[in-house]
Length: 274
Image 1 (cartoon, rainbow, N blue to C red):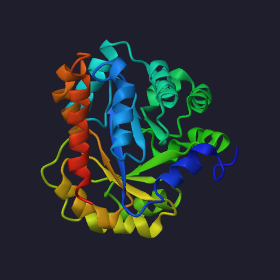
Image 2: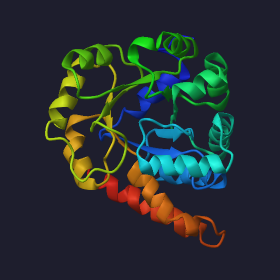
Image 3: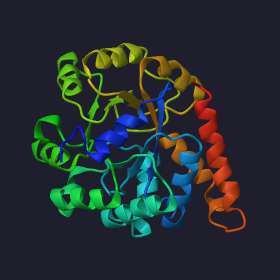
Image 4: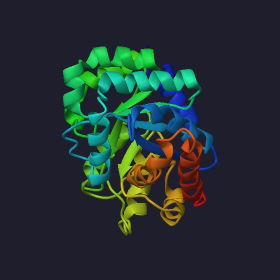
């Protein structure tokens, strides 16, 4: 399958074909419990999510801060594995989630599952791409080959560390470029780097695919400041914090809709920034 015409690559490209920056929420598969994952995905889609990042729980998530680590630990306690995360993605499709789904995982779970077996499973579950933050760009040959074979991009992350490295990664990026707004692990930041917009504009000069920004974004003011300089905004920890606050409501059948409304209101607030 050719990457340019593969269903995953095409669906991701179409998600950015809007006037406003794409809203890309991150959620952990199986958090706060597996039975809530599909309902939360549908709620995010209903509130305008363009792409969904689906985090695979992992016990050693080097790129993740306390919020996502805690969500992963809770999902792992519910028995959520790579295989279960893919099952939840399939359940999302069955329930009506039609936006692209990007798997967010680490290289050890990929190797343990088997890279080609994983790509076949992603195709079966209609997962459109994958992010592996601890896979160095220079060591991604096997995954990149599978990405081209199955038409499901390996999304590259780029941080504001080296201009030469930014150019190299951006020029060869597939799907979209994930720009890391802050050095360090994920997590809510009260303020973003002063040079973040210069960084985003530099990536846009080199990239042939859309440019999205994530790590630390938590409020509409930050979204508003970034929107003119990017094609997509990724929000993870702040959303998981909101899901955690709604957990008690989500856990009871009679209050589940109230819990989903809490999440929807937060998403609406974020998107008021654009």
